[in-house]
Length: 181
Image (tube, rainbow, N blue to C red):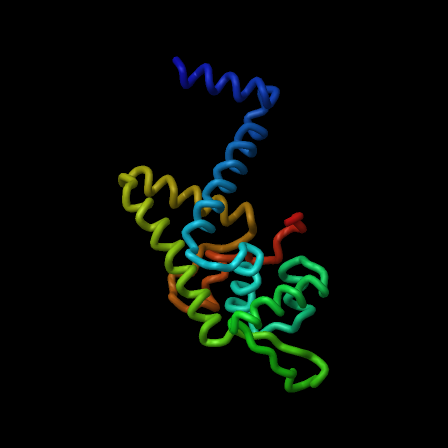
């Protein structure tokens, strides 16, 4: 009975629209899961710097312009972010082979190690939670993930350990919509 009154209360706040209710609950659940995964990263980097590092790891080497577009920030902002990553010894810059005016950014060994360690910690934390599910819950979550992948336009996550093929896990298939940070 208590669950029914809670459901009614939520439904009343969303004017009885079940899609609106589901969208609100899904948004909150994803935001909370995302926050918990960020906390598990064990990284001294801000979420923005972690995002830039992941983009370089997964799609690099990238030009500054391509990286700014992928991260959906202005070129001066990407320059500042790269300056911080450079100070930490996580990236390196080199001139483009075809056009010497283009600067390409890639990860150093330390940058690759930082990215891999962070990804490993987040995946291990989530894997531990998944191990607590029973068979039916695991099956339902698998189906839910497939639906989420369809919503965001990504295919199933690759199962390889190749970081370049791990984009569906750590990053959307296409640049995310513009969000204020």
